[in-house]
Length: 271
Image 1 (spheres, helix red, strand yellow):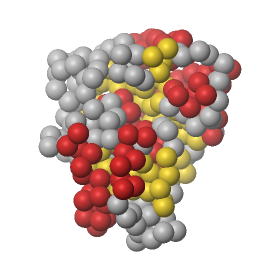
Image 2: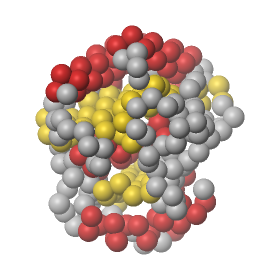
Image 3: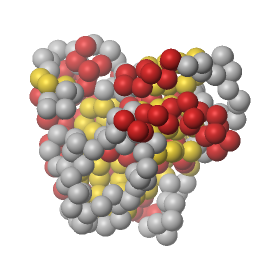
């Protein structure tokens, strides 16, 4: 099994780096179009989506794939990659250098490995979280190969909490931390994993926005909470995840769930 995890990490690193190098050449230069859900897409998203799918098919021919741009039906394969070829397309098209490539590997419907590469920040996050899968292997969360951990601090006005553009209603009530809006769902949540923020919320993320971060946050010692009635994972074979949103909260430790959840849980009722 150790050889398998080594192959998985090396594949994610190589693929994301190669894709990222090409995307940097297109950064801020492409005219986006609007998809049915209102989000933006460019030819770079479509190119990266195909390149990653082809790479997976070559290296892991028995693995399934679910991606933002093409494959939305969750397959019956035990192993499945969930891919966001450009997380933060709006930033990418508008010349803001915070965007990433997100790869999550699921085993029987639940993520066990996550990798997010932010080319222009020169940051690569990854982690392993096996839960109740019965799998074994390397553990922990990392950024550029160095271990990362969530913060042990208590909330204050000198600490950060990240929100998304669709969760700004949280500002209508007093909040115990300073607020930041990043514009990239995975990075928003990874700020919790790295210890930079005590919490982060996403109101309407799709499954490819959070699959990799779900692993890394927990591997770093954090807690990931669904704000909807149903749990996020495991995904169900044959279900279409193209238009489903998964409102969620990430916090740095279990004790902070009771602090932050009451302030953001109303977002789950909008789905």
